[in-house]
Length: 227
Ligand code: ADP
Ligand code: MG
Image 1 (cartoon, helix red, strand yellow):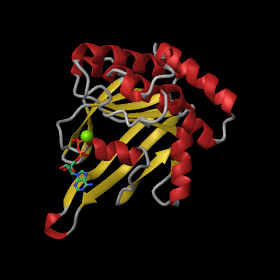
Image 2 (cartoon, protein in one colour):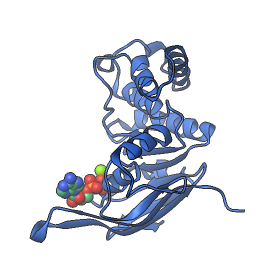
Image 3 (cartoon, protein in one colour):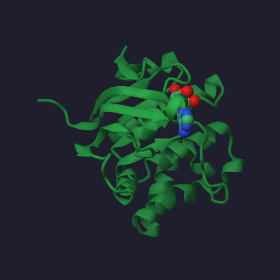
């Protein structure tokens, strides 16, 4: 019995620019991730990791091929449907935290839940629970500027899972941190993903961290290859 497929990237093509300036970044990329599977994406800069993650996260629309989320083809969906799916099914972590500067850590975790229609009390208790889990409960009322880089990323990771997605996409989530902080944040991320039974695709340059994932893939000539 095969496990449920959470993410299926099929024959993905993505070209930036036109004419002689055209740059084809993805040339028939394929990747399948099952429920609960953690996959590392390790490839040099400029090979298309962010393009692949943004396409998988429905932040960019590919030129051809498709991205299936829980079996649903997404390329042809209206923007509003894509946004809704992204909000419910997918959590995204960027290299830079992208937290809202005017709001506390706790509020940053509440906002996506409120947008989704969760009531305030439930959103707040979920936010507190996640911040505790990420070992930053004591920082709940602080704004991003009052947090260290590692703490900011912990908040960003917690925010990505606030709506209980089943797929977490992370684009070099610890790429901006010193090695020791990077290890701690990565372990927190891993334990959160494992505990919640999430599927994850994580771009990283850290081979030691990548080794802890279930699979490692790379990008070569616009295609995904298993390592
Ligand atoms: P990586 O994340 O592996 O560093 P990217 O997916 O960011 O790679 O980029 C792959 C290639 O596509 C790079 O050569 C980059 O310059 C180019 N690229 C990315 N985004 C755009 C864009 N919006 N317009 C034009 N070129 C882009
Ligand atoms: Mg990138």
